[in-house]
Amino acid sequence: MITIGPGEGLDIELDSSVAAQFGRQIKSVIEETLSGLGISDAKVKALDKGALDCTIRARVTAAAVRWTGKDVWKD
Image 1 (cartoon, rainbow, N blue to C red):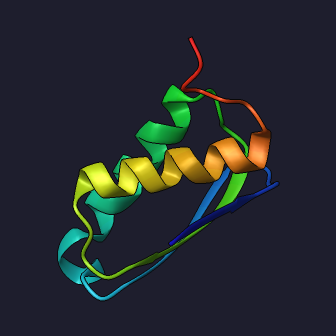
Image 2: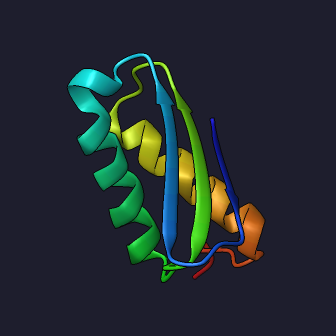
């Protein structure tokens, strides 16, 4: 689960059962996804149970769309 709200800079709070092994990768995927969407100031809370990168990207994108109201899927 990913939630996004207002923040200064990018603050990622990660609660993951696999954080010891994959925490840096998960945070990197979140940062890259938000950067690609033009978001540089946000507080992100991520609750992860071992999701694949593609799933994390999709969840971050969906949360960002809900938060900003900007539909990134429109042509």
